[in-house]
Image 1: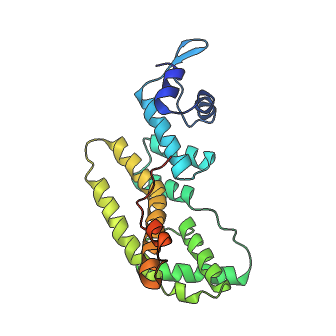
Image 2: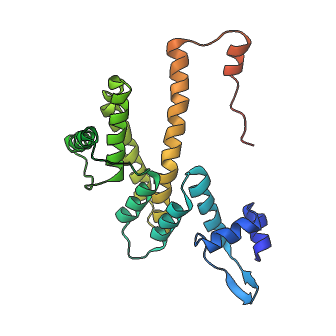
Image 3: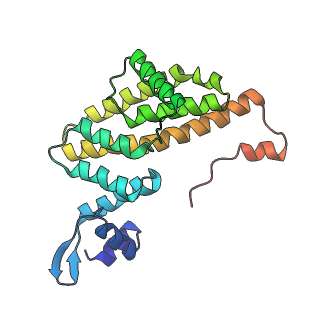
Length: 226
């Protein structure tokens, strides 16, 4: 198919597709003339993957490029690919010489080791945990830090379930790797969404809701996406 048909099938404007080509997010098509190229189903699938990483996963162009490169690399292990994906979804923490920051890093590291988690030194997620601990303490929300084990237990169960699903994929290695990456990138978005929905439900049950028309509005089904 030509780029116009690819655009129609993917629902992505031609200029955007050309931008993805220039940025290395989409492999080049097969040249049929100096100004024409043909694209196949793998390009259509890659476009869907790119949009998932950028739009739903919220990755930057650079982060998406590194994730896609790890997916395409034949000599990179699944564990290493997941590491690239985790780094892409974890914002870099602005570490500094502030003693409080160093204490928070040490606290996060000690908590991870106490939990028995095998996490590489310098993990971006570990630094993100330290940043969260420091922020919660600065805001006087120490009680929320007491919920770390609750969050960890839920995360362990979810991680085990995800890996069980991935482990059942034995036919297509590329499908396995892509699923692992999407489980990391889109899984974060899905978990955050579920958390917000659960919090809204729990808040209504614990603190009560409005009555009358407002109450009826709160119980309406979710509106379809535009």
